[in-house]
Image 1 (cartoon, rainbow, N blue to C red):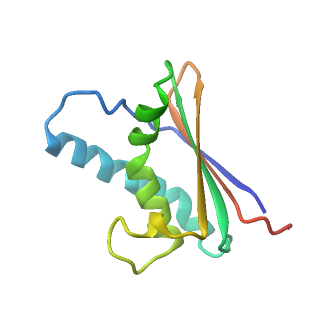
Image 2: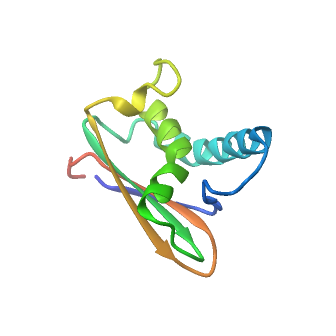
Image 3: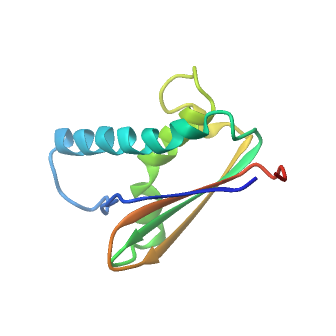
Length: 120
């Protein structure tokens, strides 16, 4: 059963120059917001699954920067799907297939689509 979440978050370009503590604070805040959306789906997803992360913004980024800007989100979603692993390790699991997209819009958002291929 495919699940789609659209979360109002601004995912900045990784080319933004800022102190590491500011980036860390933003990533932590994003993870809290994403976690609040995901916690209602705790038992709704089975592995293996396909996850599509879509950055929605006013401008598009080149592919490398788009993927890198979503790295924190990928780490968080994968650790939600496969808990109890060391931080940053779950995203390498072969049971999760990752896809990336971007869209332009007047407001910023993050779209997370999870499809485990199991019909409802």
